[in-house]
Amino acid sequence: MNGKRTSRRHFLKTAIAAGASTALRQAPAVAQGTSRVVVVGGGFAGSTCARALKRLDAKLQVTMVEASPTFTACPLSNAVIAGLRELKAQQFTYEGVAGDEVKLVVATAIAIDSQARTVALDSGETLSYNRLVLAPGIDIRWDALPGYDEAAANRMPHAWKAGEQTTLLRRQLEAMEDGGLVVISVPANPFRCPPGPYERASLIAYYLSTRKPRSKLIVLDSKDVFSKQRLFQNGWKELYPGLLEWVSLSSGGKVTSVDPTTNTLVTDFAKHEAKVANVIPPQKAGRIAERAGVADQTGWCAIDPVTFESRLQPNIHVIGDAAIAGGMPKSAFAANAQAKVCAAAVVKLLRGETPVSPKLINTCYSLVAPDYGISIAGVYHPANGQLAEVPGSGGISQVDAPRSTRSLEATLANDWFRTITTEVFR
Amino acid sequence: MNLERRLEGRLVPLNVLSMKLTRLSIAAAAVLASIAAAMAASPESPVGAASCSGCHPARPDLESAVPRLAGRNAADIVAQMRAFRSGQRAATVMDRIAKGYSDAEVEAIAAWYAAQQ
Image (cartoon, rainbow over all chains, first blue to last red):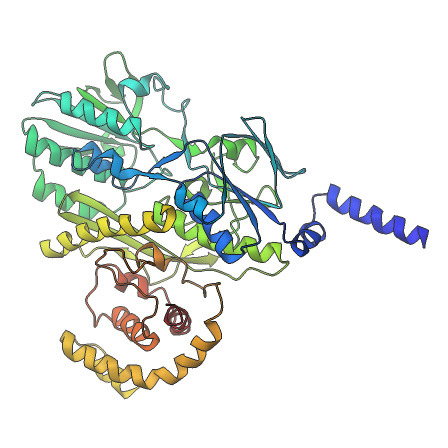
């Protein structure tokens, strides 16, 4: 009797120490209705996931950790830069999330112990979890582009995290005299929002063509091909002839260093001294991913395509821009879709059930002008351990579509933003 | 089935398409009703449904050119998805998305939405 009990206890202890298992530790917690899920990050991915978890299982204790009390959305922020929209229209509070009985903690997660299953916060508090969802978005690689550090970003804004940087770039464009040179530099893949740099170039070109028509915009690219390329290039030819010049990698477009003192971007072939320089720098998963041990050598997080659980650490799921989601781009739509699938998988795993193989959509609109929208869409499913596009699905807007279709897609872009931000934040 | 074949491969004016879809709806209604009954109580969405609300508003009060799906007739949703997939119904993105879904997936999603208020 005694011997038996000891060996069972020993087995339990060993299993827990090995971090092996989920079922043994979670079963009692589920029975008491006290399974704990911590979500780190309150963007499109994190906020969606936290709310979806509570809706799927009201008994779950869901805590969302987010450093800022207000969220500033990136989609449509290029319209803010071009003076077509105000930053306020991009901002959301977390009242809706809290209204779903998600516990909000305004703090920064600074360390994660995947063995003890705890998250340490900068406030000194420690949260424990049965499962952790990381939705940390991106961080800038401050060491990747010579000359471009945090101080340089005050002179040459990246505006790749919406907020003060967005306003700074807008102010610089507004302050520039007609006839000035604006330069945008674009990194190699992967990065947040693949069509984003080209939408930004389009809307800055729109601003210049309507307000400062003698100006010039150069896009220095570290790539030869990009998202919705034909659609963008056709739109540029039609709307901004002679104003916007795209320099591909093979034409010497790759920026190798910058000098913020002179606002200069350097390539292997030329130096561009800009009046306004927008440096979109190389990126990586938000820093907590690295601290949690879920980021690999690429700086991003490999995940299981069914559950979004990290390939590197058990019980930690990664969603949104930080994840390597195979064919799915780093978009707000994808983040929202992944978050709902991940929430359903987490709930099933906590109950000891097997998550079902999901199917996800991505849809991304870009504005080439305020009334000229284009899109890319795709349907994805797990295949060979990755999220792959379902054969025959997806693609970009028709290349030869009439202007009425472009106008409709511009309307749909705005409608999409209203719908998704309502679902996520309101 | 005959009806589907007749619709296939040609552009049909919207009002005619809508009439035909209504007839198709009646035919498919019985099958879908049983799926709907089974799904009604489930907060868990069928495979591929979670993404839809990224564009299709969940709330009735939200202004959008994209229709709300909750409470819509399941057979209508199925018929529209088939029309998007075959190209009979003009679309911006739904043609590209519909091609990524099987009939069985669409039927389950339609039934799930139909069961909602």
